[in-house]
Image (cartoon, rainbow, N blue to C red):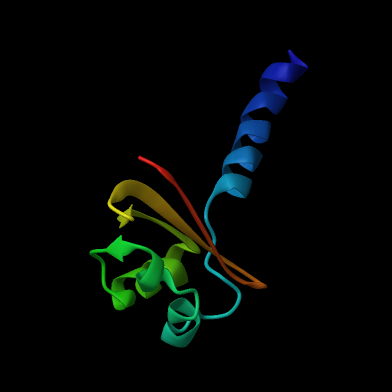
Amino acid sequence: MKLLRILPLLISVILLISCSLPPEQIVTRKVLLGTSLYNNFSIEESPEQILNALNMEGEVVLKALEAGRPVYVKILATADGLLVSSYDR
C-alpha cells in the first residue's frame, strides 16, 4: 500500500531529473564554430538554428554526413563547454 503512494512521487522525480535543461552560460557562435562542427560534418541546419536549440534545451541531435556516411551528431552544452559526439544512423 505504501509503495502505491510513493510510486507516483518517484516517477515524477525521475522525469524531472531526466529533462533537458538550458545551459548555465549562453552558447555563442564563436564557441559553436570552435568545435569544427562544420568542418567535420555536412550539416543542413544553420549555426543560428543550432544555437537557439542549445540555448533553450541544452542539447541538440542533428542528422549529418561524415565522409559521405549518414550519422547523428549530438551536441551537449555543459559547464565546461560543448561536447560533440556522433553515431551511425
